[in-house]
Length: 367
Image (cartoon, rainbow, N blue to C red; front, top):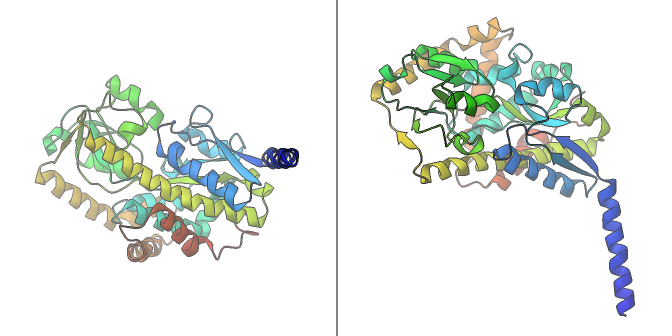
């Protein structure tokens, strides 16, 4: 009996090894480093769920940094240097004017959960957006969204006077325009250069969520967080596949990857929130409530920017911009009604799959 059991266990182990050996592994690059939620939460959840949904036919391996930088991701995915990675659309404004529309509307939405689901549904159902990804050899599978953006600084900022001439790293035109409106100097640079630039005084601050203090290890250079509550960064298509990868998958496995991505993106939003809570629980950074004049100026900027958004977008090549802004705003309202504060990442992932992806034809999507 013992011999039979041992033989059975040996046969099972050989079978498992054979399945693992035959699994097709996606080469992914989360790009922001090992401490970022993309590497810790998003991609591990995606690939775990993908293995489950495909019964081990597909898995993935992430290289968190070093292979392709965020500002190289568009061509990296197109050329197959990596097969799965985060595409930051504001870094490539000329290539993704239609898809990047969402980044001009960063002031809309009450939470990252709402905004990330809205952005995903908007781009999936936007024909001009889909055409942009196709032209660039990519397939869009979903976005996450940062927690609310604050001003992370090396010196305290409490008043409008403190913002004058402040050199601030910005990741999108929306935030660059805000910085300049407040009298600061907007500096464009990838997040991979942020620590060195802050430590050397190239910039004085970054417009980011406080999770960056952990994700990009800014604790040694950031001393203050001014709570401006100025919208979210919603231009990160964190689940973007190379067309070369997509062409290797059948419709069933494509659907599995899209579904798995929703669970990963929901987990990433929760991961961001956990990092912000960790920063707030510590005593290394002082959180500052700014003067009311700063908040009033923020509100005035948002009102003015939203009113002029259609003209800004049309200058970038977006057609019928106001109708598209209205559609995005309607989707925000839809998701505000669907998502509740107590919803778990697992529940949110399932909701995103049902509402956005369940009706997609994966034989033709991304073609």
